[in-house]
Amino acid sequence: MRLKNVPGAREAVDASPLVLKNAEDLKGRWSSQVFGNSHPVHLEIGMGKGRFLTALALRNPDVNYVGIEKYTSVLYRAVQRREEAELSNLFYLNEDAEKLESFFGPGEVGRIYLNFSDPWPKDRHHKRRLTSREFLQRYVRVLAPGGAVEFKTDNRNLFAFSLEEAEASGWTVADITWDLRKSPMYEGNIMTEYEEKFSLLGEKIMKMILLPPAGAEVL
Ligand code: SAM
Image (cartoon, rainbow, N blue to C red; front, side, top):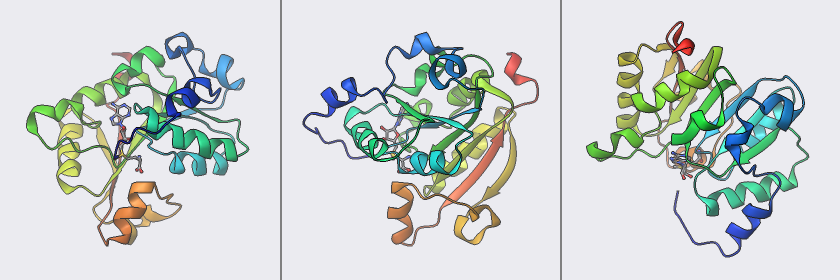
C-alpha cells in the first residue's frame, strides 16, 4: 500500500467512533461491550481501504467484523467508506497485528482474513510476513475451535512460503488454488482493492484456507 501523508487523516481517525481506541481493554469483551450480541467475530488483518470487509459485513449481518490496519492514512479511506454504509457489525483498529493477543482473548476470533499481505521479500524480514510461523502462532492463540485463516495473494513466492510455514507449524490446508478465478473457490469471492488491480493486469490470484493444529487453542 503506497503511503501518502493524507492531510487530516490522523485527526479524523482519532475522532471516529468507528475506530476503537484502547483495544487492550476490549480483550475478552468484544461480544458484550462492542457488538452487544454473541455473533462470531471475524478479522481482516491489513485490510487497507476496507472494500472487502465492508462488502462482507453487508453480506453477513449475523457476523461481527473487525478490520486491523496499522497505517492511519490507509485506514482513513476505510473510515470514509464505512461512514457511507449502514452497518453496526464492522469496526476498526488502528494497530499493528503483532499485538493481536493483547486485543483478543483465546477463542474470541472465528476467522481471520489475510488479503494481499505485504510480501516482505527480504529474508531478514520474514517474521513480518502475516503468514510467518510467528504470526500463525498468534492466530492459534485467538482462534475459536473450528476457526480458520483465509489467505489470498498474487505473489507466488509469498504463497509458497505461507504453505511451508503452515505445514511446518502443523496447520491443515483445507482448500487451496493457484488460480482462483478458475477454481470452485471463486464462488462468492469478494474482490479487494489489490485483487482488482492485479486481476485487471491478468495476474493469477492464489488462495488457501488453513485450519490450526487440533487442540492448539489450549497452548
Ligand atoms: N488487504 C488490502 C487489499 O487486498 O486491497 C490491502 C493490501 S496492502 C498490500 C497490505 C496492508 O496491510 C497495508 O495497508 C499495510 O499497512 C497492512 N499491514 C501490513 N502489516 C500489518 C500489520 N502487522 N498490522 C496491521 N496492518 C498491516
